[in-house]
Length: 266
Image (cartoon, rainbow, N blue to C red):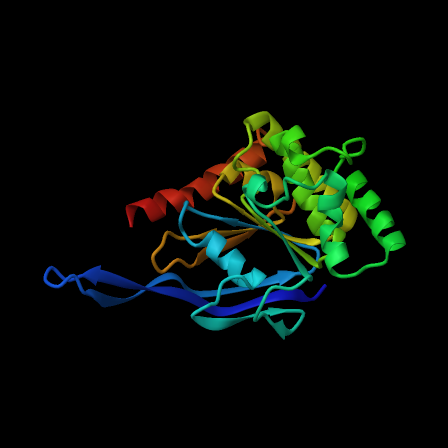
């Protein structure tokens, strides 16, 4: 397999300002770097997890790859084409499904939405929507509106809508963070099934170590902001489903926790 994503020296900074005491003028204090010199290669079909503290720049990095946020320096390539804007080759699933799916559209029409925008023929749309709804386990709920769905079902709608556009890469920004523990576990299991069936490249953001170990083939651990960097990328060569209580996975969780303990003392 080749590298589907290449991240080369990516940094992201924001200008900070403060108000002068007299005249209430805002003065620039200079840039603060959220990300500083991130380098990473991701293979096609890989399930890659970005793990780190809340606010460490994981979502910023994901949004740079998605083309939603402009980087300050560096380059991001998808299939050797430099990312400059969003594209249908990158599907995005956000944490808050309520703000991402359309409340006035049924499950079917939400999933179909992107295909209609792209002017895909009706017969092809029907086949694609049916396949994606089946893929996420929403058969029988096609005519329901988001207000009639549970949190987990709404996230399934988001995933199905992204999959319907047949992206090469699925970018997931803490998609299960707002769900209760039981629903979250079920969605993790479903996501692994979807990944195994579709063989999409998945980039998944989380601050939950156990979730990272359960899901990822590779885990990139980010340091705290400002000046966040990738401290290490771990290869997790284990089959799914994974028993997190097994000795090897328990040891891995403790090893990853060590990165956070060290970072906390710096």
